[in-house]
Length: 113
Image (cartoon, rainbow, N blue to C red; front, side, top):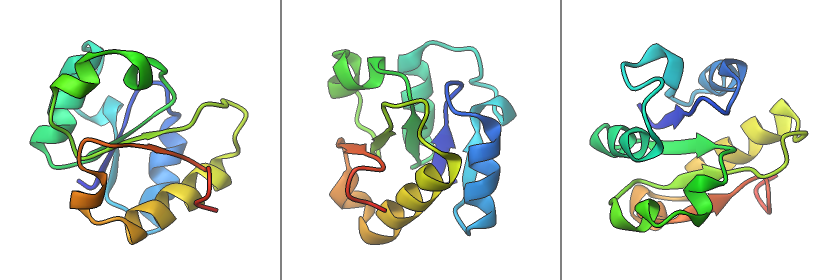
């Protein structure tokens, strides 16, 4: 798994990413579905996956700084089209090595289209 999409991201986004060659898994296909945010981030980290979310808690809450992770991909506007999310996440994952995004928040689609 390269990317875990959390419950704020429609499963269709993970499916579209998967069709673009990204090993993306929707949280609903895991046993961490319904768990709290720190548990979700730890799960992603344990699987060496970045997390794609629209949940602002992953940008402003202290737990993100306390958990080593492989990157949080965050999009703020829920009206962002699925194609823009998919393209920007795909581009960011292609350009950034895991060490480049380690413990970082990557804002998408900002600059990744």
